[in-house]
Image 1: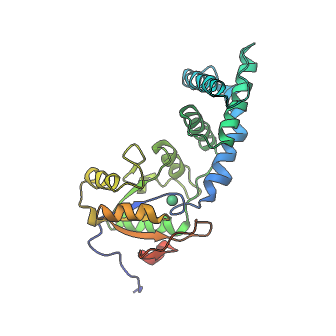
Image 2: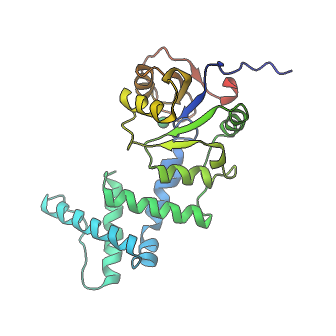
Length: 249
Ligand SMILES: [Mg+2]
């Protein structure tokens, strides 16, 4: 017999944040963003004629026009020929990344570059091994597992599908992103509980950000603060903390 503390029996679903909770915060900044930056030009050169990519290029071109008009001094958008245009688009995209711009075109393009990277095996998702173990055990105990992250649902699925530890998507019941609502708003957690179809107090939300726990707590969810190396220091709080998922099994 092991001496495990079982998750409280009233918990029927676990809702997990990604960055700083299932996955090192560094994964985004040290792996995903540099991958997109390095691959934007070769990706555009290889795929610029595909309709989806051509659409994104058109969005980026009009965003660049707006930047010029606003006096932001973006890199020029060359129009002499398609090859020059594609290369200049790549420079503009890198400029957007430098400013951490929330651009529709940029976000869509990054998603496509990551998908390409995951599918070709150059990119692998990272999930803490103790989290993988917890996912398996929750699954066996019929506890539902949902993800709530500000990354798009596509990006979330790719991370878990092409993971170092194998395909983890079969362990998950589903995903929420900010199309459900912002992570700092209680109403987002209320909607999530409604969509899952159980009471908020039967859901355990785990995140590395106290303000997110505040919002989930306000909506009536149970909460735990994830402590991992590299996570941002958090303000004073009274939430229980966890630094390894084996402690909640
Ligand atoms: Mg987080």
